[in-house]
Image 1 (cartoon, rainbow, N blue to C red):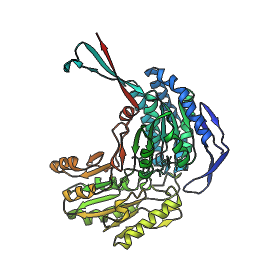
Image 2: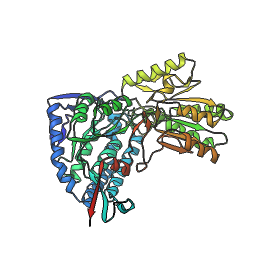
Image 3: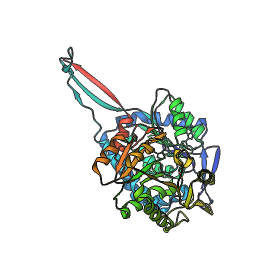
Image 4: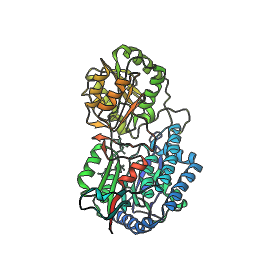
Length: 472
Ligand code: NAP
């Protein structure tokens, strides 16, 4: 029940602890250590001491450790899924999917570890560059500070720890306060997998306090952060010359053109909007449907949404469960109310059953209502009609955010136009913006962040390019 931080290969107790409650049942599930400045100092020192070991470790050894993590996680898949379901309130079916993805992410990291290389350069292309051999190498940065959110507590940690270790770095990981158990579970597995002491350190405690110490410590060479835009922007402002990767939020949209197959489109849009109660950074929040198809789309979408089952995150029957906290549920309800006051219609949902907010479909939502222009991060989606795909593209782009966007169409010219004009990190033609596999480049523009993850791309973010020139 009482947990400890994982520092330098040992479990370290702290003086203060905080209770951790399951989002669905409200039961106490653990007591979580609250790291103080001394604990953070120990973790950074341990990571720095291990940096030389990791820097010198051959690629095949880093690869085999990551491969071992992937194998061990596969052996304990069900246990891992239950940890996620319990601490994050993620329905167990969805939690299993996250673990399967995490296993793959470590496998991709193992493969990537073997292909980190530079290139040779023809310096004689420049006058005065003759007689030199030039090549680049990618070197590890050293100690990486990784700060992660609650919503994918295993796979988003894997997207930081995997590439960092693949590149020969060490990590101080600060997971979200609501989901530390997944991170402690990883520490246990990583040790069994043969990761040297100090290469991964897990410290928990308040984001403001622990996070700030990581962001401002000069021994930490990069901060890789996934979380809300407000915190991400604040980190960027305080990080000085550190490398910073920011994977932030969005109000992602999908556009539905005429003549598409609704039997395929609607289940995907429902998955995009309500998987893990919309607490996904690329959750479908706005759906723009061309007017010819609008009424049919809304009718079918609402009918299918009503079939989803709410309940205990640990039950196999459950499609959606409680949001991460009662406070977040209250916020989502207040935003729904604001939209209603502004003329929106609640087609279904808009109310809670126990701790669970029902999937909510809104129509007629003004563009400046919070559920449209801010990130809802809850089970709320709006469906509005548009005259044309061109109008919808303008609406998608009229946002502070730009993570991913989707367009369903059979018109190649429109698909190419959308690919060119949508101002986002990734355009999904004939799919929802929620599509992600773990080796594709992933990240946003505008307030959705900077830098890319997707293992190979994260390795680039977490390495330094060095040039070597040898004069004959
Ligand atoms: P959050 O509140 O921003 O927290 C994220 C992490 O930052 C947590 O570990 C948190 O610690 C820590 N933190 C809080 N304040 C901090 C500070 N001042 N300095 C340093 N660290 C600090 O986000 P969340 O509610 O967990 O996650 C939801 C957000 O993440 C959404 O906006 C979502 O879109 C975004 N997200 C983005 C992606 C992506 O890849 N683009 C993926 C998933 C989620 P505590 O938990 O202790 O506060």
